[in-house]
Length: 315
Length: 231
Ligand SMILES: Nc1ncnc2c1ncn2[C@@H]1O[C@H](COP(=O)(O)OP(=O)(O)OP(=O)(O)O)[C@@H](O)[C@H]1O
Ligand SMILES: [Mg+2]
Image (cartoon, rainbow over all chains, first blue to last red; front, side, top):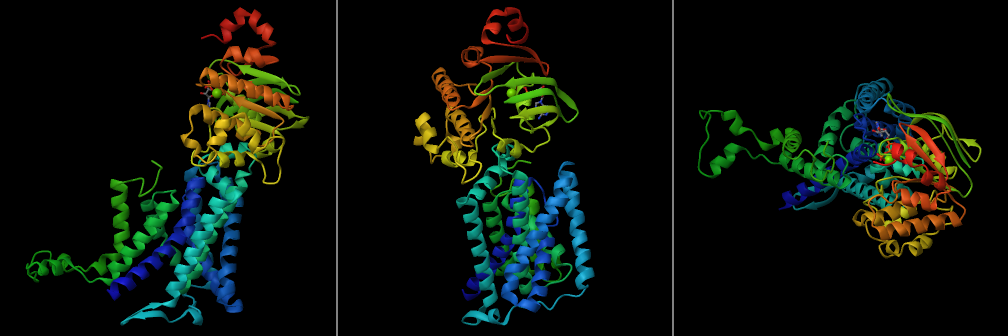
């Protein structure tokens, strides 16, 4: 029971972090039709900036500043890069973001070096939040959930309760009509791109401290973020939310469980020994295949329900 | 007020408008007629800067060609798209709010004026626009554009597929619009309405203006109607 509760909390907090990352990707995709391959690179920028700023200013000022700077950088990329490439179509945009991802990775290596950064959780947030019998739940995980929920709530308020949110909602599906009503849609695109990358930056501030800050961090979360976006349904924020939690929880449980097919067969009375054919397959533990599960989900989803959990786009 | 000269428009490589010219004066209702596919919608879109074009579009003396669509809208040109292009997931009230160009600037039309003109919209203010009937959606697109306080509205096929009673209501709205000093450029299939309310009419064929005149000129010129309008 305690194992279940703690793993569930771990799964949810990881899922919420994934959502911070995928919400930006999803917003950008549904609005501009741009599949931003460099999205996870903004996650990395957020982490590195937070580390560097944190050295001078401390963790909490960096928590605010790093996402803002990341978002500004994103807005500049949109304004002077993507917008120019846009007229050559989606393939050109895709290649552009692909190149950008490499460019950012190489720049990070040049500026900060190849080694991982000693970016640590601040002391106040270190240690267990509470302990259930023998298992404890880290404070920082709780903080991660808090930040993600605060972000979710602010984005929701911004989209649902403000005028600019209304413009964004309408421009998601009818950009031309919105512009003909006198709204500066190109600027709205820039804001959405900046906002989406700022969210990725925020995830980086948190994720970098919780996990690791190194030049390959973008490449290692990038695929997962795409899995979330596809499984949730490209362009659906609610879908991305569901898929983030789903993948977060599945991953966390899978890593923690040492179930194997052999074990299950043994439980029903069928013994598996080294002489059984395909022994290594039967012996494979769930925790060993855990990293592959999201991609399995991705492939199955594309085969059986290509529009994703809550997606509306057919293409 | 609006002077279009030698307007050429393109979708990619296909050349759709070949030197269109037309004028709309202060407080005038002018209709643009023609068969399907001759380029009437394209003309309006080109004026709004929504398609690639060359030539000249002067509005209140200023050149519009080269401006961004939202800039053209800010100069006071309103566009009511065809096909009831509402925002289906937003409510009626939110659709109308989006018509306003900024939160501060309120023009000669208020939300309540719209509800007075079309009580149905008032009753359904908090309903998702996507579930409105076709006629109600059409009124919503019109009212949404009026909320932006244009000095000239270009309306693309407002009565298409509407019941006769609603068509009357819409025609009534045009009178109301004119009373408030706004000019109208109307693309309309129903010749009867266009002849009824317009001061002048243009007829298009193959991306060019092939005839211009008063309602009386159109009524008297059966040969032109047969060649360019009747199906
Ligand atoms: N987005 C587009 N891409 C390429 N060609 C287009 C596009 N939109 C319109 N056309 C072509 O341009 C020509 C003029 O179209 P337009 O929409 O202006 O016609 P219209 O006079 O408004 O007629 P209707 O509204 O009855 O179809 C047509 O031949 C049409 O096929
Ligand atoms: Mg048309």
